[in-house]
Image 1: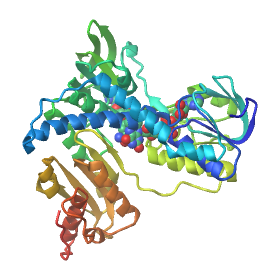
Image 2 (image 1 turned 30 degrees about the horizontal axis):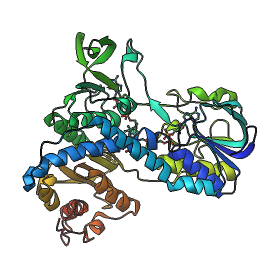
Image 3 (image 1 turned 180 degrees about the vertical axis):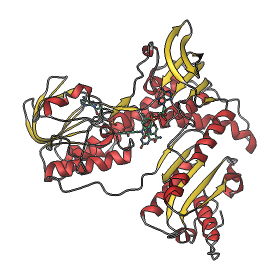
Image 4 (image 1 turned 30 degrees about the vertical axis):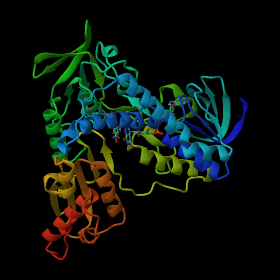
Length: 472
Ligand SMILES: Cc1cc2nc3c(=O)[nH]c(=O)nc-3n(C[C@H](O)[C@H](O)[C@H](O)COP(=O)(O)OP(=O)(O)OC[C@H]3O[C@@H](n4cnc5c(N)ncnc54)[C@H](O)[C@@H]3O)c2cc1C
Ligand SMILES: NC(=O)c1ccc[n+]([C@@H]2O[C@H](COP(=O)([O-])OP(=O)(O)OC[C@H]3O[C@@H](n4cnc5c(N)ncnc54)[C@H](O)[C@@H]3O)[C@@H](O)[C@H]2O)c1
């Protein structure tokens, strides 16, 4: 470890995916580099987002699968959940992901100085930072990778609500839960705690949950949630306040001039994301934010103070791990070499591990129809072999193709292994394959991947190219 007062070529602030990759890249380019973070290595991604959420979602999936055993002639008692033990498993997983990360070893081997759990970092001036733990460091350039956190609502009683992060510190599964916000986080929390036995009410402000998904996907997930016992309320109105009750919390809301109340043991608010910039004293470094508080960057990921760059969620663009990683690479390259590299054009598959899973890549059908002459085809999971074998016949795979070029514009999947299936579409789109080229790949039978081949074959036949077929 280097002493306080040290001077670096590049300091990376924040050790999530964006920061870790930025540190690796700067180290690889031979820059004298420091990585400093208020929290632990891995950031929100490893400690408070995808990794713990996926672990809880896996537990929910195991419960579901255990209940299916009877269908296959296997007898067990009704499965039951010990939440304390599950939380031990969540902690084990996050610890293992943190400590087994090959990135940590690579960073060490490059001689990058790593300061974990250093408290909030703030700028003293545009070349100097101080951390809550008392470190004072200087650098020629910086990459800000401080990520984001759950957005707050400015209503009375908001302090009685929780965020997804609080789920890891609960000692038991709450008997009931209000989930406010039907985006990716809200849907995930609702799905997991419904599976664990909470009575869940999901309140979404707009006309459909998962509003950035294809409309058919939103409708299918909402319908499956309702069948599973989640009370989904779309267009529910506006929240006026929260109050503490003897057994939990009450939400007061209003729709069309009529007042309503909803009560539960816990209210989890997931109404969006805001940048972690409050503690940074950005004004001391001349770094500006936009109207939503995200750091403004140009195509080289330079902020309004050009020797300070920003990467990942803190820039408010695509709030996902893979784009954060790409950002970190580009920002660190430019921090060391000067403004030379821009972000590559990339297709970004997005998916979530709710039950049912859903995923997308490319344009939704209605986005594509607005700009292209489109052919869309859907294969339902109750007609595909592997899903019938596995007893997982809910769902579908929809492919959206450009009639003129026969190129893939979008793929949308709901149901078992939706996220994995969508990765195939992302690769085909990145490779610029035509739909008939996809259809001609003899994918293994009977597989989930093969469902993507089936829908490609279906579109190809609709395009009057009848020479293809798929087994799956
Ligand atoms: C519930 C949930 C589930 C998700 N699931 C997925 C998923 O399945 N797939 C996916 O791709 N994405 C998922 N995401 C999004 C993903 O976690 C983020 O896009 C990703 O973590 C962004 O990486 P980042 O490096 O920009 O920031 P983060 O991972 O947020 O890391 C930020 C870092 O900055 C540090 N920091 C913050 N402020 C300061 C400060 N003032 N001084 C010093 N350090 C500071 C933090 O300690 C942390 O190390 C999920 C998010 C949530 C909330
Ligand atoms: N599996 C995944 O990949 C995954 C999971 C969780 C989060 N994420 C990432 O994190 C980002 C943030 O997700 P998020 O779900 O926290 O935010 P979000 O912005 O995606 O969704 C929040 C939703 O809440 C609704 N909303 C806003 N105000 C409301 C109000 N007052 N009452 C009720 N509903 C309201 C919005 O219409 C919006 O759809 C996502 O964009 C995603 O990139 C990814």
